[in-house]
Image 1: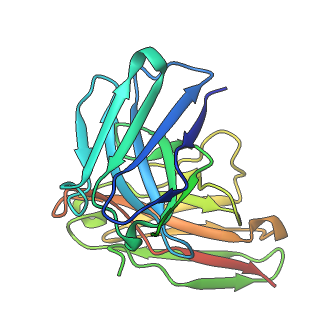
Image 2: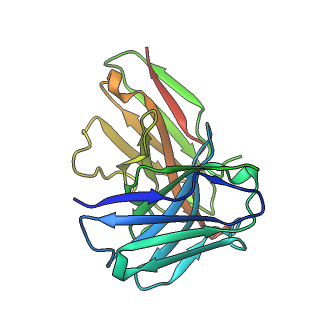
Length: 117
Length: 111
């Protein structure tokens, strides 16, 4: 059974870069789209971006200037870099497996990232 | 302000039927993009509940059903159970924004 687990620093300083990794276990990272979604405490969901296993990406225009999503087939993982963070980037970050028609059918448990000095 | 509009909360007694609306525009739901629904139990990750407007993934009870018409969609929960207390989110794609968009979420309370 495929499982996703996001990991990374739980605390990031303002203006620095938030970096997270999503490890995919129980199945290959090939043949799917992979995505990052975030949820500020007590608020709703916000899509960050997709990466196809072949490397093409699609980012939320509201975050595009600060986001990079990459994939490492050899490690069966994909990653998120979000630069120049502020307190508004404090959220639970989820990694998810997506279908070509843009829905998320498998989610990881999420990891809380707090932006604070 | 979310691109897709949902009521903040709905409630019902056990056994009742409740519906959650998701209102969009001609650039998302009205542009023929599918609507999908997620259930988020307290303290957990969202779970896919309905995909492609009215399809249930394996394991989702048939008490949950989805529909779409024009620029709106709805999620219905029949035979409401205590375990259905959760936040529910609709999701689609917006061609004007070139982005996946979510509704603001609806909290379902079982009285």
